[in-house]
Image (cartoon, rainbow, N blue to C red; front, top):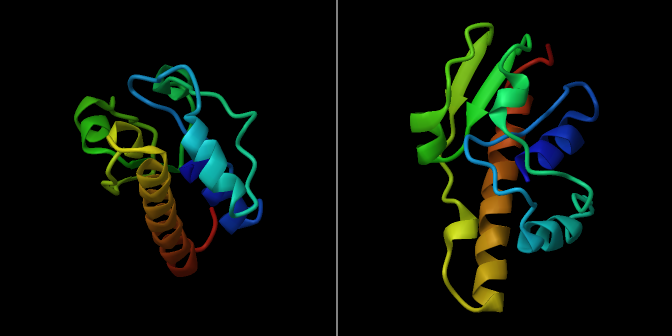
Length: 124
């Protein structure tokens, strides 16, 4: 969700990629659903491993889950590293509507945080 929001909010002035320390292999259907509600189609996205980006030159690394911060490798070339802890909505247990609500909550928190960062920082 963060990758799509970052791309949309930065209006193309940033390259955004997301990856996980233990990727699931799929994009959660509820994430696809709640992102479509705000006009962002992530149905073609893929769950990627951070290993794909280890050799890249990176301006900014943001970890979003506590477990990611603990298991995320160091990106020595990253100009800045931030930790924005968000609850992983995929781990939420509840019926379909409660799960949808949790995904919306996390989506909105991510969007607020990204909007705040981009509003306070010039693009690289």
